[in-house]
Amino acid sequence: MIAMVAFVSNARRNVWSDFIKNVDFLHKQHQYTKNHYASTILYIMGLVLVHGGFGYFLWESSFAYLKDLGIWNSILFSIPVLQLLYLFLQLCTIFAFIQEIRWKARKAILYLNADCINIRRAKQTYLECLKGIRCFNSIFGYQIVAIFGYWLFLFETICFYLVESKSNSKVSDHRIVYWKVVVINMGYLIFNSLNLFSVVISCDNTTSESLKLMDRCYELQEKFDRSTFEYQELQALAFYAAHNQLRFTAADLFEIRRSSMLALIATSTTYFIALVQFY
Image (cartoon, rainbow, N blue to C red; front, side, top):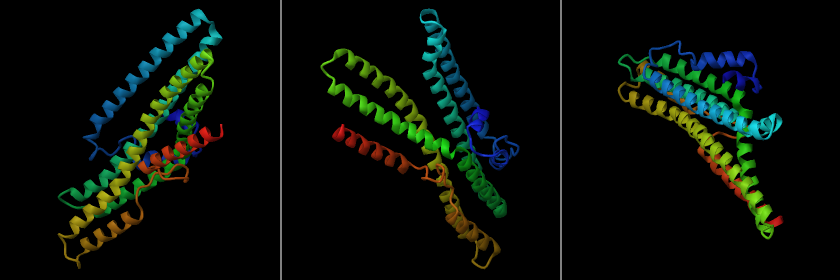
């Protein structure tokens, strides 16, 4: 799965190696990842279950088409299922890395929640998280832009066929074909929307870890005098987190947040209105 995303990535090998190292994707540091194993196992089980469902559906549909239409038509009709499978693999890989970055950011807060506060270790972990996000943006940025563009394309395709079916309402055969295309694209749109919303929400939740780190620093500052070294270190860490927040970007074109989805919906609605007026 990782190899498939790496193949279409524009990043170099050293970017991938730095990314795996900074986010601790192989879990070499186990002191703060004990509670993470259960969620990882559940995620893998769900991944295998969905992959098995896709594989079974692909096998049954290909076998049915092969028996009735021949080998080339069966391959042709299997392409949409393969497309959905690849899209699912791609988004699951992106989602998995986002969750790892989020757990890495939580480690920085955990260093401040321990009995013996380790401010330097918390800052070092936060710096590693920032490096991981920079690598993430370099690796997955253009792919996320393509996913947003694919969502917009599906939405406009559905709108186009709805307008076309209305203009050709007198021809029943055309209406049946148009509605079939609309239903198929609606399935793609729903599937893509669920995956895209999960990725956007995960990015937004990971970004909020910076605010949690700042709040924790401010809470701990109340326990120390202003002249102490710990107070100055906590103030410096809060200042650094405020000016270097965790931000996911899509190829540096826009920030991946909930507001990006609202902007995408507004843009697609504007295009739909223009399509209705000028078609």
